[in-house]
Structures are given as C-alpha cells and as structure tokens.
Length: 603
Image 1 (cartoon, rainbow, N blue to C red):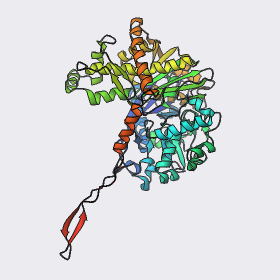
Image 2: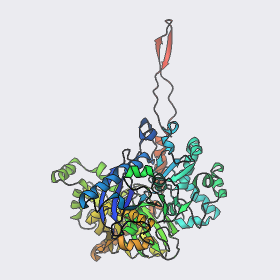
Image 3: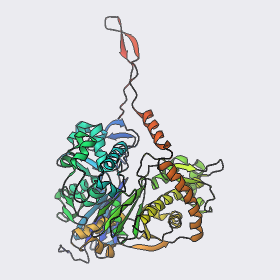
Image 4: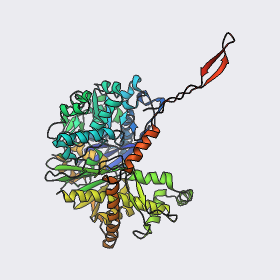
C-alpha cells in the first residue's frame, strides 16, 4: 500500500453521482465494510421544463425548454463534496468511534457519474453556465444523460456511419445514442453557435468532478469508449465529422481529445481546496472517473464472464464482461478493458424503469389509493405492489412496452414511446402497475436474448440499485429471464464500487478484479425461476415481442409521427401582430402603444 496508514485501518471514500442526488460512503479497505454514508439531493434537481438557474446556480430568468431536454447545474455536484462527504465521515465516526474513523486514515477517493452527462467548460474547467453572459442559455448547462433532444443528430451520425462503412459503428450494436457525446456536441453546434465556440472542453461530468478534486483533467477510459466513440485508440475521423457539418470537423481536436486514464488508476491527488471542502487529507489519491453502472459490477463481485449486472434505478444499465469481442445488436458499446482490464466490457440498457413506475404513481393513481397507503404508513408503490402480488400471472390481461423514455437497447431509438394493450373499464391501477413491472422485465429479457444469440452468454443476472428491494419485481425478473437472480449485498453499490477503485488507485490492491474479490459481495441466486411462472411469462413475452417489433422496427412508424406532431405543436409560433390601444399623447393627440407581452421560449 502506497501509504503509511496501517493497512488494517485504512479507509477510502466513494462518491456516487446519480440523477437526483449524490451520496458518499466511507469504506474500510481490508474487507469492504461500509462504515457510514450520507446523501445530498441536488438543489436544482433536473431542469426538464424550465431553465431556472443563473450564474453559479443563483436564480435567473426562467426560460421554457422544449420536449426531451434535461439539464443540471454543475455547482450542485460540488455541493455534494461539501456536504455529503463530511456528513458521511461524521456518521461513520458517530457509529464506530473516532479511533476507527479518523480522516487521517483515508487514503483515496473515487467517484462515479451518470453517463453520458456533458459539461461545456472554458480551458480551466469553469462551466459556461457560470459565466454571466450565458446564464440564460440552456446549451451552456449540463446536459444530463436523459437529455434526448439530440435524436436528429444521432440519426444523422448513424446514417452517415453506415453509408461510409465506418467500422466503429458495429462496436455500438450498429447505432449510437442521442444521449452520447457526439450527438449532444453536434446539437450544441447547430443550435447555439456562440456557446459552442466558447466551449473549450466538452467534458463528461465524471471527469469534471475529478478535475475539481485533483486539479487535473483526465478523461476516463470508460466514458471515452462507451459514450465518446473512442475505439482502437481513435475517435471518428475529421472527414467523417466534416461530412456531418463542415464546422464540426475540428470537434475532436478542439474540444474533446485529452489524456485518457485507465480505470483504477490515479488521476492525481486531492488539492488543498478540495480537502477543505471534504474534510479529507490533502494529497490522497483521486481515482480516474467512472460510470455508475460500470463501477457497480466490482461492488457486487460480478466481474467474470457470464455475469450480467443490472443496475436498476430510474433507468437500468446492463454491464458484463466477455472473453472475446462480439457485435451485439443494440448494445451501447463494447470496450476493451471497459469494466476491468483483460476482458471486453459490454453495456446495454433501458432508458426508463423506475422512472416509469414513478410516472404512473404520480399521474395515474386515484386519491383512494393514495389515502389507503397513507393510512397504513407505506408508500403508494408498496401499496400497489402488495395488490399486484395477489394476482395470477396474466390475470390483468395486459401487455405493455417499456418505452416511456424511449428505447436504449436493443432498438436505440428515443423517439419511441410507451404502450399498454388490453385496457378495459374493469382495469385497475394495480393491473397497470404490474403490467409496467413486467414490461421492464421483458425489456431486460430482450437484451439478454440479444447477447446470448450473439455469442456472449448470460448465465447469471446480478441486480443492484434501489429497485432490488421490491421482492415481487425481482421474482418477476427471475421468472421472465429464466436466470438465477443474485442481489448485491450493499445498498450503496455505485459508491462502494467507486471506493473499490479508490483503493486500487491508492495502491492497496494490484487491480480492480483483485479488489472486487475482497471488497465486493452479493447474495448468489437470491431468486430463482419458478417454472410454472416462467411458462406463463413465455406466452406474454411472445406478445411483447410482437408489439416490440411492430412499433419498434419500422412496421408502424406512428410513434415517430406523433413525436413530430408534438414538436410542431410546441415549436415557437410566429409573434402575433401587436395589439394597439389609443391613448392621449403629451400634446393631446392620439397615439398607440403595444399590448403584446413577451415570453421567453427556448427553441
């Protein structure tokens, strides 16, 4: 261990940046024990309807956002370092004592982030949203992973890649996503040229937060490979980018390319400023950034080929290792060493899972159900789950498509939308809720089958994330996929995974695989398929697949047409002619004044 700290007492900190909050966990290096944690909800949450922030996150002039936008404020991420890390230390000290949890025992800090989440910055890493001249410009803010407004740009990238026979497109299952670095960068160029020109670095948030901690900008190999189209040591060529838009030719050289750090390596050491924020020792190792899903596989001790880790939260990301390179339709990417060194890391995902359940509860549940849950002191989700669990499989007569936030895998099309078939006047909220639970399981089975048929066999499904607490949902997944379902032993999977990477960066372990064997853990086969249930779900999955292909593979393009109609309806309309009202001028003659009011609308 590259430190004078007693190896049996050494600690590391993992910080997980999710969609709505950031959480920190204090972890003991020699056994992976989690000693304390704390969470901070982002003060500005997600801005998907109105831009309400201003310089350095203070209130600004509200600006309406078009559909499919999702923005955040970068100062919220620093607030997590200022708040959650010290609070986690305090919680750990309160529970285990100051002698066990002393800041001087911390040897490293690691972080993970949602991806692809992009920050446009100046040369020194200052987010453009913090510059007064850009405070009311949406494109100057962080584009969260779920910002899907660059679908048109993604479509053009995909079409051109296939037309030119670009080899890298096959590493992404034949399609790149509107969520990723190049599509969002092209949207920035074409919709706000001034902000694009002012952008000196187009930075993954995973790397931006490491920059704030260490004072060094290092791109991590994970997001570069999966989200930044970095394959075999190269990005898409300048000629390719120029064919998309002549002014995009220099995008890689001018705004994207930078030093790339290996996963588990140290990006640098903690600066004095960051030490003051966090209460940690200056000079400790700061691990290269990573993606929340990918760091979770080591936390679950699931880094061997055949183990697919599904990180289930607002969305689901599926990651797994394979011994060789294969092309899987609709995968989000395959990267050499993308999860651990020596293996090919594969990624797939579903854009909406917990978000879908949350949407249903927020918009479609009668007051009587809300009141019944409140009377019992449980959440509406728990109430609906209990009611749904009483049903026989297929009793509700429904089948749904889990595309309320588009489809990430295997169709890679964020213009798709949700469907529920079979509703009747007798259909209840619990019927619909269970159908949505099942739909997400069918989506995962579709991904598993794509991997199996492409030469990347899946033998174990390992679940992490908040949704694993729903026993009904877990059993449904086991029955639908016909796989043994293991569950991570930690409630803070990504944060623990980041802590594991911090331990490796600090020299406590030789590599991530070795650290995962000691610090990561899971409950093997916590749920197993029940054959009668699996048979019933086979029949419903067949109906799901028919709908999936009918609406998703071009047979019926109605979802795209509806999106186009929606965009047209919400586009800025020509200003109405000014209404005028006569009034007396200073000399007693009549004059007119405009009665038109202005509304800020971002196109």
